[in-house]
Image (cartoon, rainbow, N blue to C red; front, side):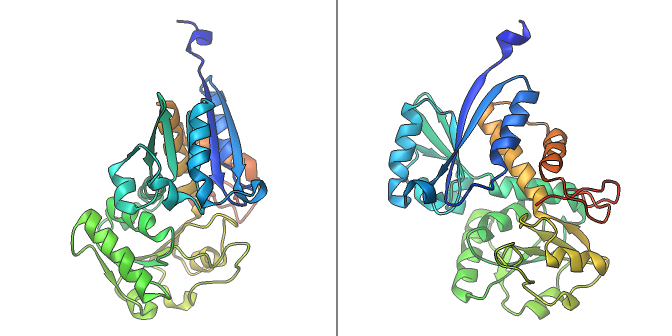
Length: 307
């Protein structure tokens, strides 16, 4: 079979609000091109198009009719889409959110790659997390998926803290339903929680470009602890910078983003993405320089970072 005969084409979309800065399109398109395929990735920005959660069913219907192979889904559609697809993966059902929809033969299947992206990134970047307890700071939209990913990656027990006790309890309840009792518990006192754990998973919006600052006092951290961040706008949040300065091993949100997109690419195309190649492209796309630190692995061998 010739290379031309093996070439395939895909049409993918991203449904969400204010997604103009997303790196999904160049990452997916570049990976497909490197594999010898053609992939067109289109943004469906609900804010620009005047769409709301109530329009999600129409978007899905038109994606099917127009021959799309799938959609990535982000805020505020993840929970809505869960009830609209024809089938739901067990993980997406357990987490209560869909962020990837695969379309095959006119049928839609919802998946959740948030947890896979975090689990893969944590295992690759901070393998010492396996077998340790960790504090999950933030029980918002990302909390359940990130917590589930951490537990699947081998974290022994999660202490969950949030400014809303109700949200923290809800995340713990969903995690226990997914992985069994005893693997997660509410612990609202951040200082005392950090005294009991080997690492911190930062899943609040504090530290984003639109919400600068730190979600906790870095003096509470110990050099022996690890810190995993899920924000990658900017890549090096104030917390990551402070944690690294005192000697903590760190993981930026770029690692989760790359593994998440690699997983979605595999679902859309049926082929395994080359994570190293996607990492290189992620770095080229952003091109910022910082402290000789690799944006994904946090080693000291590459002088790039991403946002």
